[in-house]
Image (cartoon, rainbow, N blue to C red):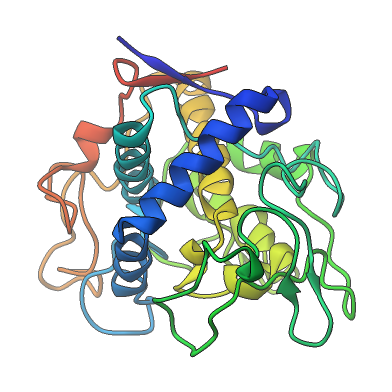
Length: 288
């Protein structure tokens, strides 16, 4: 039986409470910090050597789809009614709108240290200490909208620019490609006259604080953001019927991307699953 992922703005008070409590329990059990460590471990850029799976590669979308499913499974082991909601940042665009409320994720960071002091994930509440990361910081930080150098969240038009591209991805399958749905959604610089950040990447920059870099999972908004990104792949698949994950076959031995990206039928580390197997999730969940 499929379950439903809902827009965070439509959650009832009880649904918010159950989601928050399940997250806190997964954190208490020590499981949550393992998700942070996994994301850090699979954060290599295309300027580094070796295989890329989580970012700057075609597998950006299936990798995070499986990552979300693992977190969702952990939450549902605590409370089977819980699913990961999504944050529609094309509609809820202010520092005080959903999900930045005291009954969900809490609000912006304060002072020079940008510490989050409201909501269930505030350090002073005693339930959300950062134990895994790339710095020594112990409390959650945010800088919503980047007050000193303001940013705006992506718009519906920005998403449409990505969604209308009929190709899933194109060679050389990295952060430099100027076509293809994957990088237009992931949002690396797509040309000299383009903004430095688009869509997915711009949202990470807009939230700021802990959401910058490999340890971004430390902010629970990571999951709501990536559920919305996953929803865009879901929508793209339905708009472009028959379009598939690319590349279908691995780049050859003379290609600069040989052994650096995952093709459609190759295993997607750290799991024993292929992008092909993650293209259709209709029997697992759907979006409201």
